[in-house]
View 1: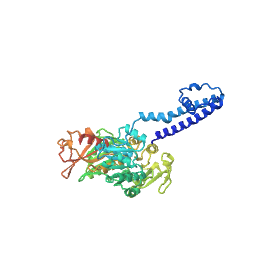
View 2: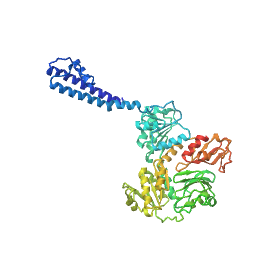
View 3: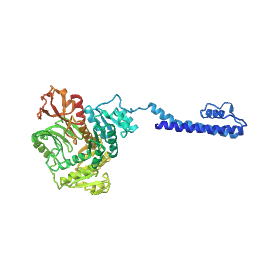
View 4: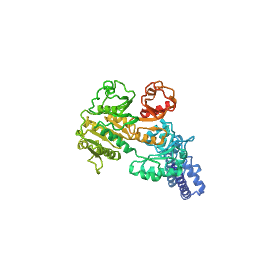
Length: 544
């Protein structure tokens, strides 16, 4: 029995009870004050006529003031009950009739799909990854309003409880490729237990907020337990640790002595203010610049006239020694360990991972958090200049924002940029949509938890595809492209149509890195492509 049905039952009981009471009182009133002995059935008929405003028949008018007063009260009661019925019964009924009806089960059946419990910003990133590889999915969403919004936005969703057996059965879990639980650590464990009951052979992927809870999820029956936050923290910290040395840091190996890497241009670098053509990157380092992020906008190929600024992120390929040479060019010419330290704002799971990485690199740092706890140096609000000055923001070389709220992170970026225009701001955000705003606010490098989570989960599910990079702004994947067989890269217009670059091809166990426009794809080739998430999606839609 749903909420509207319960209301209907309660209202009906109340209405019938009041009408019976009024019928008894009316019968006695007519006998005492009007001297008219009426039957109970006739008295009930008068009450019904009064409540429904259809008239009073032969009983009106009444001679006694007592009965007139009684009828007035009865009239008001009837009108009150009518108006009460509108919001309690009629309006909800009309809303149900005219509102969108979200399905309670999978329509037309699904097979080899992914069951996602439930919808979050991280789920949205995962859905993008799945759609790029043409993998079906269904969201099991317990909230009616959220389910309706998703359904109207053309998501494949059912309105069911993912912690219930019936909910997962309605999602056709038994025929699914995998189940993803990403709500909270406690709810995810409950979903895993339920999934084991419904289809114990289907792989279950659980995402945990706290890595130390991994064991509990495995005990519940999860096949894979993922924790994206430590990976995000390590990636953010690497932007600091590699900015004070010429070490290359994280790069994606394409073949023997051939790699692809993201290299941000730091404040104080000799490249800042030059155009790509004037920079001499190709001549000095010998690398190929296949793309670049300019304030959050990815361009491939970048225009030779594009101006390089602090925060520009170059996507380059080359040998390790060439990438290390370019890395030296991207660093500040006044790089010194003694010039300030790193300020880490936010000491949750991501913040703790960052400080651990800085400890390993033997780099000094100051921790800021609103909550007083061990290892927090400054307790206060990061959007208050007084807190930032106490953390020595004026002398800070870098600031890493590891806050869980995107709005606070955006405002903190504005305050930090105003207080110290020269410091390097590296930030995490929860949602992918916040990345652009962070760059506009003045951040130098931004990474989205939703993006990292989506890629991490997708790489676990898509066993046939090799996702090479999880924690960078671009994605590098190995994939077959049967539609390109027999064509050259140039004739297929891969870059112009998709925004992706073919950086290598694996053929007969050997990786070919000299892939130009005249390279012809053969049957069995496995292409290594680099691009944004949207670019990878377009590539899979048009080229595979």
